[in-house]
Amino acid sequence: MKYQAPANDLRFLLFDVLGVDRLHELEKYADATPDLISAVIDEAGKVAAEVIQPTNQVGDREGCHYDPETHAVTTPDAFKPAYKKFVEGGWTALDAPVEFGGQGLPHTLKFVVDEMVCSTNLSLGMYPGLTHGAISALYAHGSDELKQTYLEKLVSGEWTGTMCLTEPQCGTDLGLIRTRATPNSDGSYAIEGTKIWITGGEHDLTDNIVHLVLAKLPGAPDTTKGISLFVVPKVLPESGERNPAFCGGLEHKMGIKGSATCVMNFEGAKGWLVGEPNDGMRSMFTMMNEARLMVGMQGLGLAEMAYQESLGFARERLQGRSMSGAKNPDGPADPIIVHPDVRRMLMRQKVLNEGMRAMALFAGHQLDLSVAHPDEAVRESADDLVQLLTPVVKAFLTDEGSNNTNIGLQVLGGSGFTTDWPLEQLVRDGRIARIYEGTNGIQALDLVGRKLSLKGGRLVRTLFGVLISYLKDNPEAPHRDELKGAVSSLEKATLWLATNAPKDPEQAGAAATPFLRLMALTVIGYMWSRMANVASQQIAAGEGNKPLLESKLVSARFYFEKLLPEIHWLLSDIESGKGSLMDMGDDHWAA
Image 1 (spheres, rainbow, N blue to C red):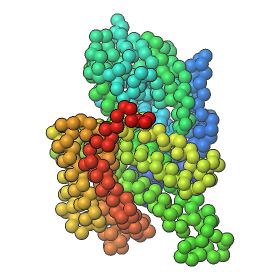
Image 2: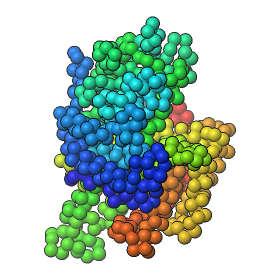
Image 3: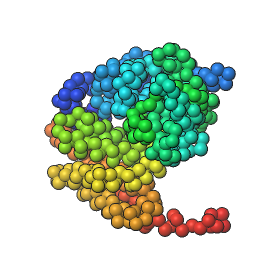
Image 4: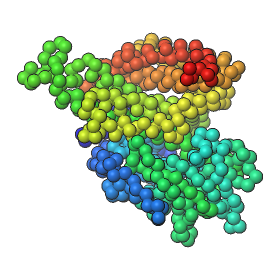
């Protein structure tokens, strides 16, 4: 079916709940008027449905192809004209710096566009998606010369960017990388090494590809403290010569087949240092944190498309009769949407998708406030929330995005398991999002091992301040008591970690994943209470889109009755400790 952008839900969230329409009051975002935001939503929806979606299924079937003689990679035939239209529409420049040709619009709007693009073709969306991270890293850490050389063409989409971290012998433990950077006499460096799983490492969408590569300088510590970051172009801008950075092959994947996932061999390729020597991880994390938020939107985008497909199918597929009496008496059977178990699946998709969208856009709004608000205290508080919620958005949205595509397939039954319907591709494509840019287990470890203690625990105190202030200021808010209970459970879990993790790091590792999920469910509960609160007020005032507002009240009830209670066993999981995880002896596994 043709994609329908969730425009009504987006306007409700951005304008009525979050207040993103007021960002134009800040000097940095003066152009982001409500009319412009609304226009971006509408136009992005059209581009997603009319330009990007038609490339999705054909791109999956055609895939990318590698020529071992030339090291060239060709993308599916439909990708190049679609990418060209996307670039010509200015979508790659949406929130990029104005001084390098960007539009300088709020990051929240990029989140909106990311969701729509990923709903309609995740593979195609990854080429400009990672480029944006390269822009941010170079803008934050590159020299003026590097910025002038690369940013304008990356912003315009004329060039694309990559992130080259992983090597055959190491993934998350980047201290083990072997790629080396040897100084040249002209101030550049000779980069030698092999990187794997490089998204967009080679392709035919643009004439140049700008690689950001982690490598070690001579004599550098053989740990993450000895890693530096280098910009290594495919084609040298000053001479137009081919840099010896070659694709050595494509990965053979279960999904995202239109995305060129490359082995990259750097054979003395020229590179230039980004930032300070041995400070590459800090520079790269600028890119990685942005990519993690984008990957969260990938999970949401696929889940939204799966929901639209399964809802359409459930409304049309006739099978059986309603348990309360025929709803389609003139037909041979009722549509399956009348059956409680089908509605359970659809409601889980709908309610989680809308809740995840709310949490993600809340984080996006905080990101905008952190860089644009004139009050330093507001900027600091907003940055605390962004740092804390980045691993939560990445992990939860991709976990549940994957789950919701599977649920969508289940709604279709046998039809969903065939290539005649798009659900099986959505399931295959979405599975990777739980793995790349740091597996979701790594996100959980980042949350409990780093973010909770960062700045003396200030980040999580900021979140509790937001939640507790909302409960205090809104005594009549819908589902206030359930939310208060969730906040209490999150406080107990946080205290348990603060007490036990310093004495035994394995306790933190055992609690990490359930803790992240507990935090996500609590924050989404906060957003559902806010959404229901606004919906109730607008209904009472006779304002707004009545069917949408009424659906918010029903959806909030479903969330608090059917989904939020998971927090109870998550807290039990955390407080039970590591014992049953770690007590299995080496000779027990295959006993």
